[in-house]
Image 1 (cartoon, rainbow, N blue to C red):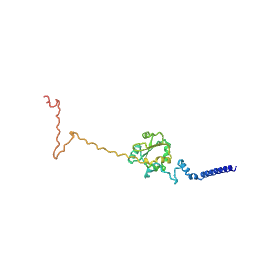
Image 2: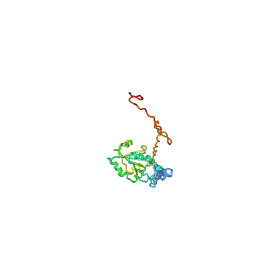
Image 3: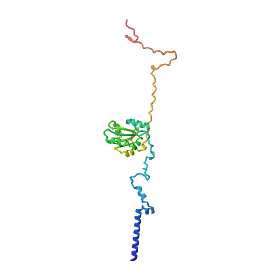
Image 4: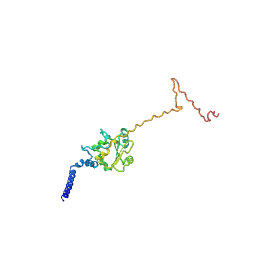
Length: 239
């Protein structure tokens, strides 16, 4: 009886001791697992979804385009007066074109123009683009080309009119700045200057050529055609 009691007591002691270790491990940072070579905290952190994308220093980690970040652009925003003018400037400067599709009746376009576009961080990144506003009621061709079906809409293109990026809907300053801030698009190909071909030399007609005369030499006179009289060429008149 005493032996059975001793065994039960020993088992009870082992269970309590093991339970105490587990409680201590949970409460004080899984130190027991670290001693066994299993760091559960590190494994879980690798798969944990975090809404805060800043690192321990409070700095947002760089994105995929971090190696291509362009330096800040000085000077005013370059705004083209028309879509074709924007394409021309893009070819001259090698910059992308930001096409902002709008209309007089679009209230969300006006809200975006008054709240989003004037924001300092949006202004800073927009200087990498040639900005042009396209009224879809007055110029339908660009809107059709980029498949615009709602307003506001915006597209990034170049002088070749490539569809580099297209989106639509109202965006606040943070969202639009993030949409625009793609440094891989900031450098676009330049258009080659058109070469004006040299017009071919035209030879004058045979009878228009003039001989180069020496001093005192006259141009020879061309023989005159015989006059045609009432009775025919070379025929005497009736007497």
